[in-house]
Amino acid sequence: MKKIFFLLVLVFIIVNLGNLLDLTEKPKISNILVVLGGKKDTRIKKGLDLYIQNFSSSSKIILPNKGYTKAVLIKNFLSDFIKRNKINESNIINLEGVSNTMEELLKVKKYLKENRLNTVTFISHPTHSLRIKLLANIIADYEKDNIQINFVSADDTKVWNKQYYFLEWQSIKLVFLESIKIPYNLIKYTIFL
Image (tube, rainbow, N blue to C red; front, side, top):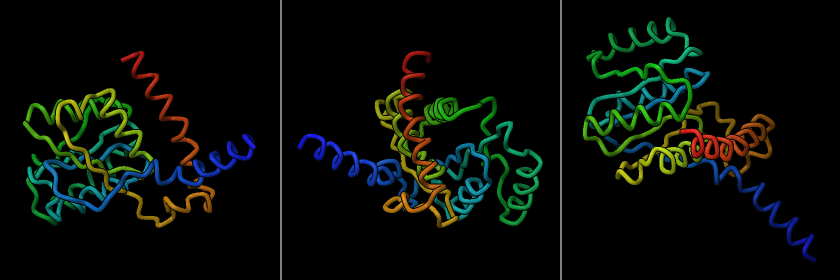
């Protein structure tokens, strides 16, 4: 009987992992938009789309500037975007000197505190949102400093479905990787930060 119960609980958890990992919601106005680094430019495009729709009350957006982000592509894309939308370049901030999500979160928090901002919308892949929230609140103390976090999905492929992620192989891999990254990151940054 215990084995059947354990198996049912395990199946329930596996089926609901997509709902647990994906904390994204519809965009809402926050003090600043932050596009977290990633291998696809869909995040940057989504962040800029929200920016021109005035979802940043400070009129500022923070973009990644990492080694895997092709600087030329971003600069060309940004220069077209800036010209087309008549944007003041000083409103677009690049995160310099960061190489992972935790470093991004710490640098963003420093910027928020220096500029007296208390709401932030992170744009990333939906499966990353729980890890981002846990790192921000447990390690970087966003919650303790009364910084409200919102998450918006940068996934425009329509492949990700948090209720039925287990029906698509790529989504299964993403959920599996995040299920490993979350405890790894929490242990790593609790001990070594």
